[in-house]
Length: 181
Image (tube, rainbow, N blue to C red; front, side, top):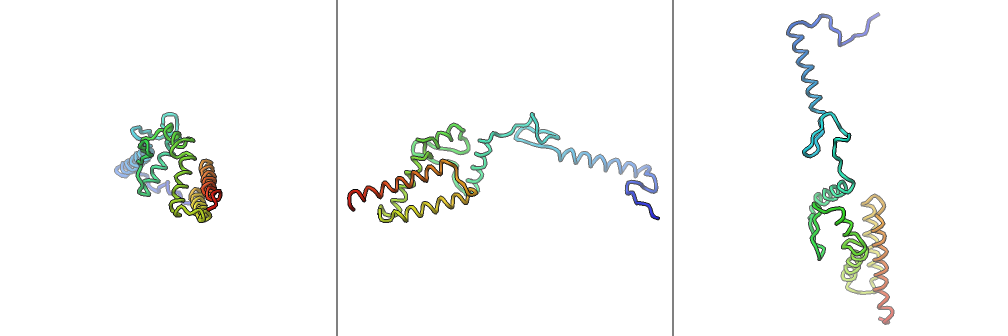
């Protein structure tokens, strides 16, 4: 019967220079693993910690803003734009400024966004009320593609904007029905 081989046990004891080489190798491995166990967040560096009270974690708003900025940059889009009244910069935008943009009377709010889309659709179809269904179909397609891009669902503000667009398009067509054109 044969015994199991234990690689940590040597047939000969380690002596002299061999022992020094083994100690040096162990020290290198220890210092390498300590160097790999560092977390750096901006100016702050924590050794041996991946979480805890000493580490700064971004707010959900900052995480989302950074994700939007990264996505826009990857698409080659500008991070600054004008809303007609002011200039918006995603790099420096605060949470309050973002909320003001999507507020009821904000540039990206339901009213202003739906009006921009309706104006574009009417102009794209030559102002022809007979092409109402084509306008609606094109907008439907855009919203379906946006839903797919966002994993199957859009935020409530997008649903409200869609409904406002359809109401405005119906009102646009209705003004021609009333006048008999």
